[in-house]
Image (cartoon, rainbow, N blue to C red; front, top):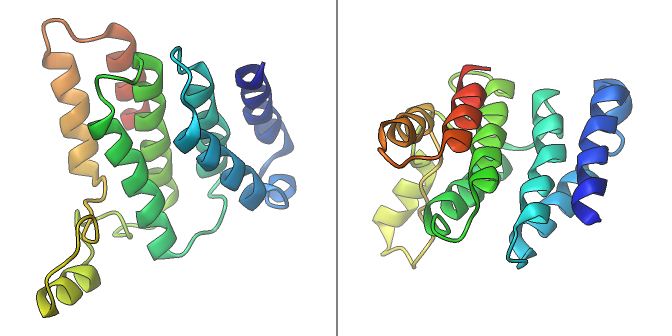
Length: 171
């Protein structure tokens, strides 16, 4: 199905390499983010698989995003992880952590995800009261590590999530 196609896409992007994959990076990102946001199936296999091509691209440093676009994408992933925690499967959660970790690894440090809140957004929010959702928290390295460690510390925590998340953090 669609999940298998997304897995194949991730594998193929890895085989292509950075130079050849760059041509497709923006289109693949657009489709994967749309699929991730809109997938409503109960098993969540397609939602989880939508993150695999994104992670493959992020590991190659693709697509080249502005700081604002990087923060927006990473924040969307963090918000889904936090707000859909009871609905997402362990595989979705693990793939979110891996995608965020790969995005961090591909950025110069300090980069657009070094601070939880963007200084420009905070300054703008101070000038006038922010509307709901305008000042969003980005997934900093500290957040990523805290989530990974909290998962490990849970008595009933998922072994799959812990292993995948820690693997993503350490890679």
